Length: 191
Image 1 (cartoon, rainbow, N blue to C red):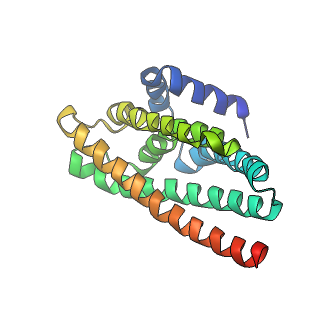
Image 2 (tube, rainbow, N blue to C red):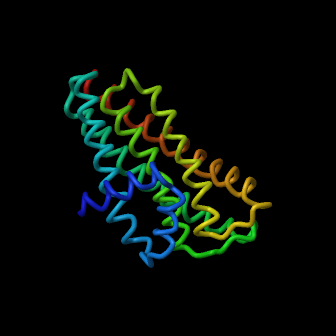
Image 3 (cartoon, helix red, strand yellow):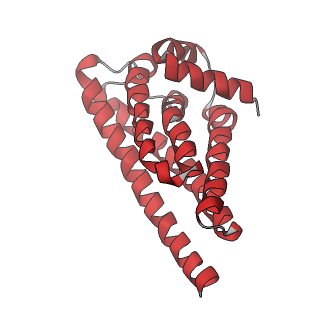
């Protein structure tokens, strides 16, 4: 786990996305490498922040760990499922279909979401700030042209549909997570 790589990539995507997408385009990393070297460390940071935030608010270590494990699993699964679906949509928008490239687009676009979610999980009372994670949509917008060569006349539709896919996948997965956590917390810790 190279945290220097993660920090530099995240910083560059936030500060100068277009230049960083050009660097990403020149790389030939497969989806497994991108997930393991970039997404997993950031998801672990989110999960760790979730544990700390849960302990501050709930003071129950079992609940905090279960919530963090759920966040890790569902974030990983949501990102993975979203990338697969978006890759299947690429040809409908005259974009380049390549599973590794689409995974790079989705994973790196999640940067703002990862950072803002970690902050919101760490201190739940400022959870409204997680709205700034929507900067990930802009990252996706810029990356779409560079990585998938999406034509300008199809770009709006592709980004809107892709955003709806991601939001839909995550909404379903997090509703499942919330249901599981509520049930476990109610039965295990309050019952």
